[in-house]
Image 1 (cartoon, one colour):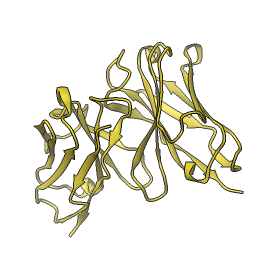
Image 2 (cartoon, helix red, strand yellow):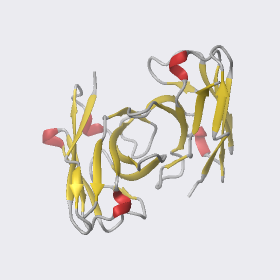
Image 3 (cartoon, chains in turn blue, orange):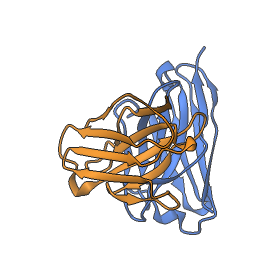
Image 4 (cartoon, one colour):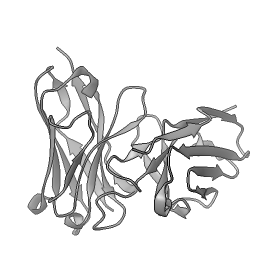
Length: 123
Length: 109
């Protein structure tokens, strides 16, 4: 069974930083899949945040986080990271990582999701 | 950017009834690259349908997707108690950005 496990959430100060991680298990070909971060503010819907291609050569960001967040991946550790800088109150949300259904696609339907990690930005 | 509008916002039905959920796109979703997800409180979304019609692994056949262009539908035939949840559509045809609809809550009448 393919599992994704997010970590790194918590309380962040406005203007501060947090680094989220998404670790994959149960899959030897994780490096072949695009990975996406999606967030959900309390009581709200789903919002795309950022995606990274299988090769990590292409990265994409929502306008709301561009210039503040950086996505990366470590193939040796089957892990994807989301570095979150210049945090704002509106970044408060549950952050999910998810993998694309088919390999080699930068964007596709997301078939495996982690349980999410909660980020709260508050002073 | 493709904006997805889901309707209705809330659907009140009884177990055994059929739910029809709509997702309208602000422009054509090419290659039928539209997915549906189910989300229950406190849990991550679960992929139900991809490429408009195709059921994801282990999804019961009471869930079906249809549509093309700018109008898409998720049908749940014979609601089971575990189907009461929030449903989101998502397009991945014109990305970035990936976009999601605002969701439809299917609640017990």
